[in-house]
Image (cartoon, rainbow, N blue to C red):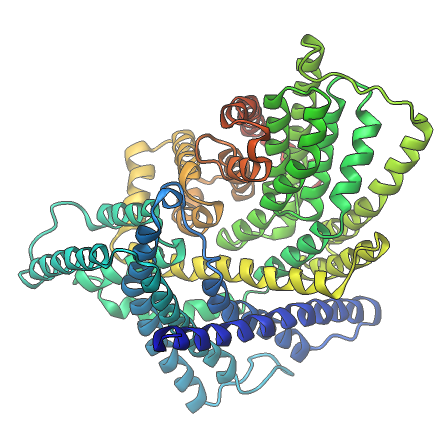
Length: 627
């Protein structure tokens, strides 16, 4: 083994142990939050110190997870073109991503975070709440530790990527071109040349180019922010001095603590074989009706959405379990794939949706109110799906034939009830406690984790290996989300300093001057962006730009947030880049063609747009469960 690879090996081991430790903290956090909730609500014995320990654990989980996610290449990228690259091109992109985006940003962040931590140490900062924790500088210092680890892992990724470069000349030519462009930019900045195009537009153009080229999303936002802070005199690097303080604000946001807990709950349920039991029993229950198997897929998709909320997992599970059964029963490949893809994306809208948690944070809204408001739109969407399936099956008997079975129907009903009741009870406890105001989303999610463990134990599928898998995957997914949030925060700081927020406000409020035109354009922009980038980037970058405009027009923010969530759900299905389509095709393999998938999802996209229009014209529907 060469010296470089040996060094990379030790760096990787450091990241591995960081991730394993963070995974252990995921389990501990779930237990502590659940214990705190029980003690407070049943025995009125709360503890400020314990609550602060909880959000400190949450901070350590996603901060240590940053380097672990990088090691496993879990920091999401737009892979439309990236998947078609050669091994050399992929390796070059990886090297450039680390060298030009992540490493410079990490160095600046470490410098500013160290200053923030040192100031906290000098002042011997303590909690502002009576009974809270002391030595606040320790948790602030985790920012420095996290980005040092990220920097170390970045070097490891560069070493490994360099070894994969088959044609070194490609790398050196790429670096030469970038160096030349850098000198031209420096010369233009040194001579204070005026911009031919507004820097806000240039910033968006560079970001979009890098995203479509396959660079990791979070690093693109961070790197673009740093680049324009460097070359724009009216901004300067001083604007990013606030970034560690903004990140520390994210760390103290107890609403966001629900994200890893709901992910953990969903991953446990994913491995508990709950979906398999539901699909088989529901398929038998409705299979005797034409289109019944597709109806059962929709209903199971809704149950999975309300219990796991993880779109990729739902689509993949149903593709593996339901698709072969539907094709075996002579279902149309288009209807089979369309119903699976559409049902699998219900987790974008139906609570406890991660999308709604993030939107609540970014729009400063109650997550409980958003969950409550999303129920009726979700039911409308489910109803439209089922109605469409029944109508198309009635009109064309060949599309979705009924299944003939000799099994006594009474036994089928009993089996279906046994499979449905446990997840419905879990959903009722988790969402019911939030809707009733009994528990916060984080507390309900922690109770949900314990409930998921009990369900898995009841299915005899629980094991320490399963728990370890769920905890480690939670660390990866959580770190990916929060690294995007950090990068998007840096992007927003520079974007607003360049006048981007004022430009957007002037365009919508002045040039358009009509709230309905604003709503139309905002929905179209989000819908189109959904073709190319994930809902997380849209929520963290685009939504904050829209928030002050929503307020200026006097638009109901909860209603608008639901429209965004429904819109983002539709974008998951839109060919050719809808993420649900990739999940489905990846899991199905050669069982269905890409053209059949595209043909199958189009009617469901139209149904989603119809549901969106219903909520647009009848906004009071979202408040049927109360405000």
